[in-house]
Amino acid sequence: MSENPENAQVNFPVVFVGGAPRSGTTVTQALLCTSDRANAYCPEISFLFPIVNSYAVGVRNWNIHTHAFFKAPDDFRLHIRDHVQRSLNKVAEALGNPEVLVVKDPLITPLFYWLNRLFGPQMKFVTVVRNPNDVVRSRQAVIEKNGGQFTAAVAREAAAEYMRSYAHLDVPEMRDAVFTLRYEDLTSDTKIAALSAFTDLPDVSVDKVWTEERAVSENEAADPWFSPKYHKPINTANRLDPLAPQFRDIVSEVCSPLMARFGWA
Image (cartoon, rainbow, N blue to C red; front, side):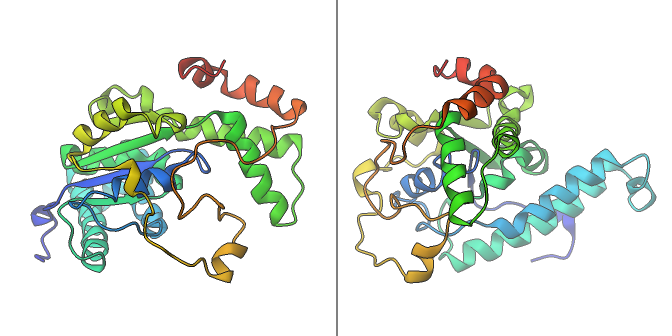
């Protein structure tokens, strides 16, 4: 690859799956990876977060710090884009250089706006939205598996994180770059057809999700973030008992705009 950032081009389409942690990003990525045009399902590319975040930090601090090192904001943009591109090239190479690279990391979701500024229409974003009561309840299970205590303050922060994860849905520049679907619509023929059209993955199939036989390792099963639903056919039914009323009140207070928007009010 050329060392000149201006020559760093995304030479393959990239679909980035996001959403709040525990919202269904894993199964959504697995669904898209059923396409013959896409790579096989792969782990989260969490290492990309600090690189993308450095762009957001640099832009916000342009007049204070960043301007001293770059001729213009676009020079800085090309510099960071080059770093992200190199990382994506390595990921694509490790996955067999698919026609369409499908990746995800929930924690990068709040940075979708910045990724869009870096790459424009060559990168598409799929955002899965799940009832925040179910998301927070799943976070509770993870915290308690780790030996932690799930308090009202923790529930409030989880609800606030949920809202931050979807702030990009209200950004006008992102309107044509994002496809949004509800977790419970992952088996809707109409919604999946629209998702296939948006991602240009026409052979996506619900019936092919995790159809390969795969043994779950002890280390994987012991991970508090691991779900018994992984590596099985799509099942959007709740596997946990409902969130306790005192926590539901907090979620309703913090997340009411999105709950109303997506039909969970």
